Length: 393
Image (cartoon, rainbow, N blue to C red; front, side, top):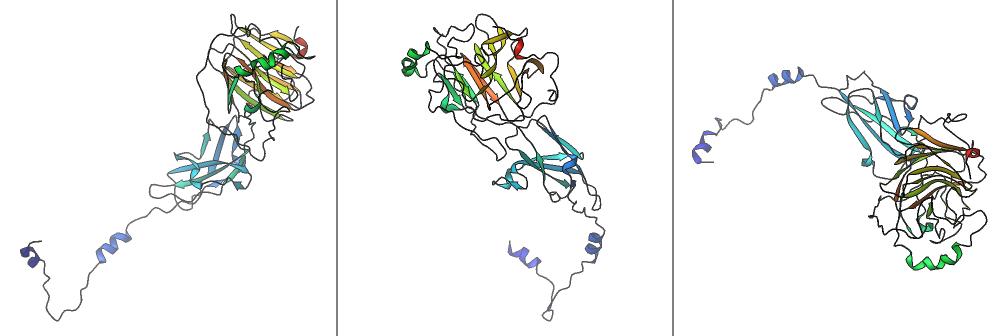
């Protein structure tokens, strides 16, 4: 600062002055006239007011009005492995939904990898956010499994929940199984999928796909186990099969399959753990399947014990499988139109494993899904369903 300005800022004081006094009375009156927004109390959140259905969670809460009106709310949720105990991970990984202006909210598009979900809510006004309410634990049961890549057919490339047919894989070991393919065993089939010239497959190689998922299992999820046979020779010959790693032993379960465009032939269903290494889904008494074929002509058929029934409908690209183990019901649905394609009614005597067979194509499996509300779960399914007695040779 220039010397001239320094001189002008010198206070006019005398040598006998030792302190200053400042009068803040006007400012004090101004502050007293201000009205500050109070911090809102946590809303009252009750598990009885929340519902879980069709992989959606509807949360409802009651705001506490004794500290002022809330302008909006923030909802946060995360999965937990069992009631009262959150997963051992950073609390900042809560998924938050902000600026909710109602006293309820529906979370959609969820995939339940664990059997429980923790939910909490906090109220906010224009100035400050309040504390979160006590978390509420909601039950989110769903069937989760991964494909057993260690025991799939050599010509299948398996990654998490994706399986694709690879004609170039396992070429060095083809000769090992050729001598055994034609021998077969009682109850097993060695022919190729219907209408599929496996003996002279076209040179098709699909692009690599990866779901980037790693197997996880919560304490409430059924135990996963490997095949009775170890190694990649679990399925061989023309049984281009891979099974799931988690058995169905009771209850009701549901999962979906996306059929990638241009897939020539595939079969989806369930099988007992002792399913033969040369067997094909639906051609033995230990497996039930729905087979789709687009090679030369389109065909969709339900198969069991080497019997089949051709279905008069278009081949869906998005399929759902519903299994009621206790009541012996296995149903196949068009997951987009919700149309029931076929139902098996039988009596299951052993644990079931999800089964998938694909030739010249790719299947993407979706798990962590609840049984949709449109599927009848009590009594006999609707009139479009059938039983194994309607299958023909």
